[in-house]
Image (cartoon, rainbow, N blue to C red; front, side, top):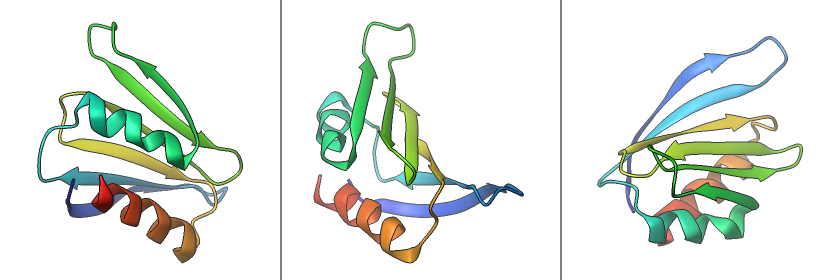
Length: 93
């Protein structure tokens, strides 16, 4: 999927940066399952709003809902390297 836009939602005092990512389409199960290469994937397709979360300890958490066009990334380590890794992965899915 293609990233159309990102925006900072919040910058916390503890250094965590929360960004919202807008994609060019709706998030589907295939996209969600492909995020497993970024960390530990938790996917709950049977929830009323199918929820997913990807965690990379000490680095980031990605959270979203299947069917939405956005997700949120909580950067614990907000280095440029980490951000570029995530965006490159999003673009190749």
